[in-house]
Image (cartoon, rainbow, N blue to C red):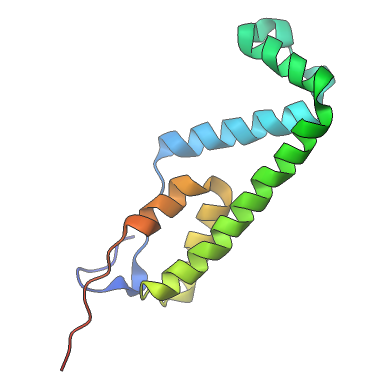
Amino acid sequence: MAAAPGDPVGYFRCTSRFWMGVIAISIGYFAWAVFLPSTIPYENLGQFGHFTKYLVDSHPKLLYNGFWLAWAIHIAEALYSIKLCKTKGITDSSVQRRWFIQTFLFGIASLSHLLAYKPPPKKQR
């Protein structure tokens, strides 16, 4: 859904499916390595599997803390998206909620669309 030209109230732009897929797979694999590392078929993943096995065996605390740090960053980005919506004149609460959810799930891939948005200048009377 895009707003009519000159009307920032309902501006929303969906993240590309490519980035949605990349981020979902990355976060999913990260969670898998943190919470169920014994079920990962490391040998079938080539060099990536060897690297993951090394991280799981040698740096499990780093993986665990990194996983939660990634989610903390997504939460911070999502909260910032609400502030950015208000700053850019996007006042519709359902649109703000969509930005919040999309940015929470896909991070900077979503937030970059909002950061790039230039609202039309306000008319002076």
